[in-house]
Image 1 (cartoon, one colour):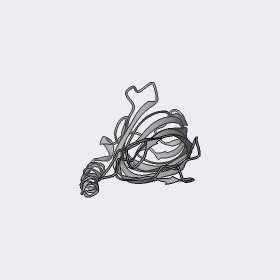
Image 2 (image 1 turned 90 degrees about the vertical axis):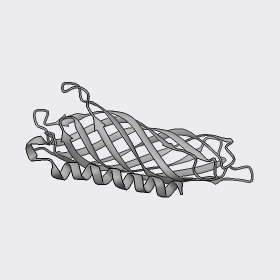
Image 3 (image 1 turned 60 degrees about the horizontal axis):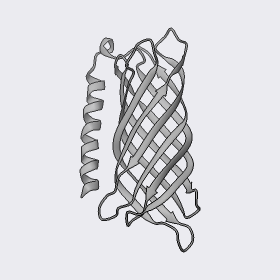
Image 4 (image 1 turned 135 degrees about the horizontal axis):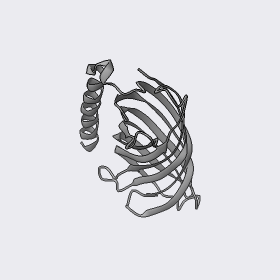
Length: 198
């Protein structure tokens, strides 16, 4: 039931976000226009198992694909496909998660290209035990992202073009249903993007 609620909420949010992009006149859109971005990095985090017991920390790799539109100067909305896989530091479990999110980014200042990224959506993950004492658990429902990134754009005097963005992002998959399992990670890496300015 919770998964259906989150899915319906995100479909509504996606519909409203895409509607605002499609209805905006070109002169009302941001200077960067549409964008597509691919990111990779490393993750460090922790998890709890199906009983709510700490499963300890993990380390691994992350990926994401984002696309959308700068609907207003310095404000983007779009979709985010994110995921990660990791190994427990004490070798008692492996974990992975993935999700589809509605996301937005906001650059507070024109002359300082630091952006705040936030998103929410529908996702899931699993703890797979390793050995007889390994931890187990599944997460299905919500996924949330909050992060910062610094944009290095080329050419600098135009809204569109290439951009490299070092980033740090937190991913949180809360407990859902009867399972108390949850996953939290910090991801650090580089995002490469291309945008089509107006």
